[in-house]
Length: 246
Image 1 (spheres, rainbow, N blue to C red):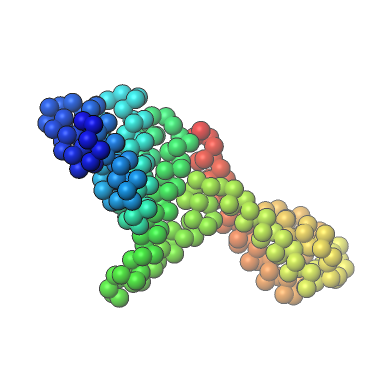
Image 2 (cartoon, rainbow, N blue to C red; image 1 turned 90 degrees about the vertical axis):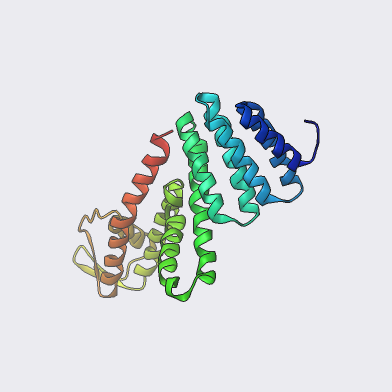
């Protein structure tokens, strides 16, 4: 029991499993995993943390889900260090599920986010390791995950969307300064404040009608309006998903 050899601890844990003593098996698997992690043997550490989680999943109860989630999370972290991103994604997904059952939505959100990001990294690695016939499939999947990562953090980082909104509003404000607008019947080159106002009402699709883009600004306004109707719902859904759940 006091042997620091992690392989010995694994054998002892398996003996306790045969006896039906899952709590002691959990403790031994966890200790072995921590030793493996200290030694830099992250694959073995991930497997032991996952085994520890499985030991607690045999039982039922609030404490059970908390310990299982923590073990799966540690296993996922070890897999990430070993660059086993596909396995890490699965382990973090299990951790997220356990945290959700335990009612811990903050940790659920973090584990869900990391699970998706690990899978995105797995897809990126697959682009170079898979046969060429699967390249397009993995590229499209990776591109979708990357856009989701950037725009709203897989639904768990809605303020990324907010920063995108601010960025696009100021970007188009700058672009409108190089074109013309019809302002109360007068064709003018807008200053930055007028351009900012036009950009806000265009992005939010309010469109009061006091300013009308003309020339090249029509193209900019059309593009901004399309981005507005696409991104604003993402921000609202992401904000609701992240904070109303908590």
